[in-house]
Image 1 (cartoon, rainbow, N blue to C red):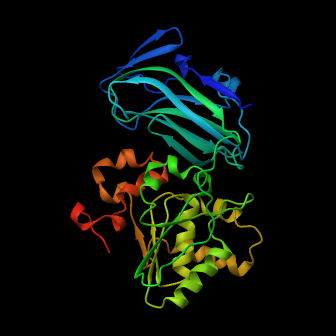
Image 2: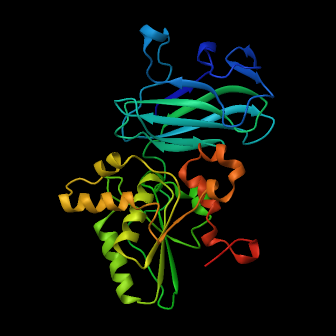
Image 3: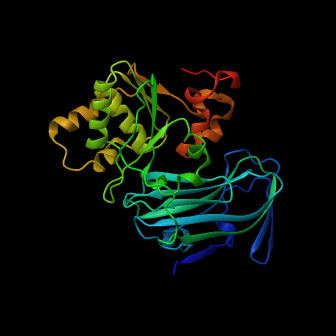
Length: 330
């Protein structure tokens, strides 16, 4: 039986933006009104850990199990659909951020990182001036959730194919890709691969590297685009582009610190670490690396882009758009 927690807005002192705000508490629900609150503003934050001696506030989020999948859903009344985001951010033992997920619609599924010690959940203004918040529902996802597609490192290239697009799916997304609109819409245009291992999240994989190497030998004129959108995929795409100059990497701005990325690759030799450091240091200057995302495509939305999950940038990937849709294509 899965564990379910209901999270309420029950403490005014945690409210982080009060300039011009009107709050009305109706039982366990809260009515919020503030036409002046800027977009991307943090409106309220819950935390799984608080220094009680300094803040006199106890934790108000449940403890989560490392490596476990959870579902987070929002129950609120909004005048404008999609105008309130929910951000869940994870922190290591040194209180350093190691990643986040963003709920933009009704619900999201995430994996609590193995490196995480604490986490926060925040309500983010995405253009709302008033809403009624009822609760957040946090539920452990059990094995009864059907795995929609088993992703592996295998891919297929047609004999007369001139361009091959490969999407590196983050491991946390690989078991429910059909629930991620930005990924599912691309399935007819790209091959999807991911890490099938239970012990690692890395997408730098010997079997995938061998598959790419063999493909380049068998198809000497083919152009391969390796597309990524998350922290592990972006690093892996850089790696494959560095290894094989005929591969073009398409990456966005979602990166974890270099040290954390190295930890996902155990048993590295000194030579391999040096090569990976070179991959990391040349990510902005490598000629066969292309950057995409909301920041580069639409500068007027830069503030919102900073709080997007990696896969939310995929619709801004012009590589896969048709010319008659007023987008560039290869």
